Length: 246
View 1 (spheres, helix red, strand yellow):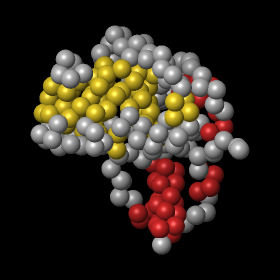
View 2: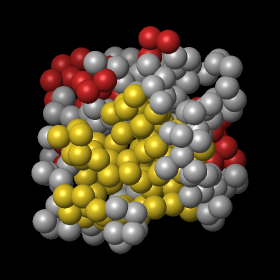
View 3: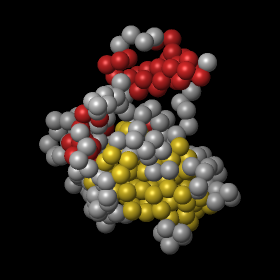
């Protein structure tokens, strides 16, 4: 029975990824593109890029809401910013029940490899770097991430962007990668790469590498898309993440 449940869960995840994928433009004017950014994490660790997620096929259907795991702490690491607004863009979390309530993690001066610690107590008090970077009490343990720009604020929940998805996310599965200024190590299943577009989609290049962040010790609520099982297995294999060959 466990094997059957695991298989069904896998099918649901594959179907979810294929249905909800957001197109990423890899031919835009800014370089490196998002695929190269992620591939470089593998190359810098001495790992084959054959196991790297395809940015157009292997996105996580995160729904825009997140939660810190049981330890109550999550480190965020800046991977790269490739944007004209990099010096002013900000990144942080918001209360999903009141998006005007925010807590900034990175300011415009953040550089590749920069890190912050986000923690939460059982009274839902979130703090950055043990309070030195700010403290805010939210209404829920669930939260969203935001990108603040000169063009406005964009949220991980597409519904808050008028239906536009400004975030694409990728989940680790144990491959070894190397983040800037850090040693090579496994990219685990509770860690995600969050890649952002910082322009309104109608007028943007849709390259999603304007800000790329690695967040760890994060859980993603299941999207509740079991109905996708009815789509069947046909065609899903082509969307599965290709792993390294032994």
